[in-house]
Length: 128
Image (cartoon, rainbow, N blue to C red; front, top):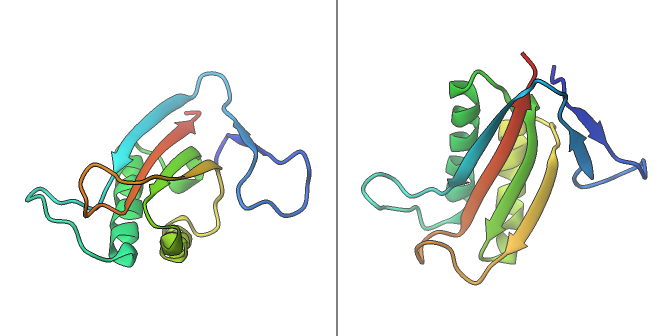
């Protein structure tokens, strides 16, 4: 169970929570923008595969730091195609199993290379 406090001051349904409070003395992990490009510079052509790889990399980064998805407090998601939101949402649900965090979704004209459709950066915090 996370020690971070999730706040939604308006109550009711919210796609993402409005804010997350990190308790004093927590370790904070910043995960740089993750894409689905591999070490050979190859990127899968479809949003579904890219989204799954991107979320997998974030989860791996959390585990390497001794954290879990429940320690996520903030994500910034950059996307080229608005129509890919379903693929991103599906992958997020698969990997995060209902955990929510404060988040921002930004549509951009392009990312680092033309093949990259999705990039995700994240912040996690855990009170040990």
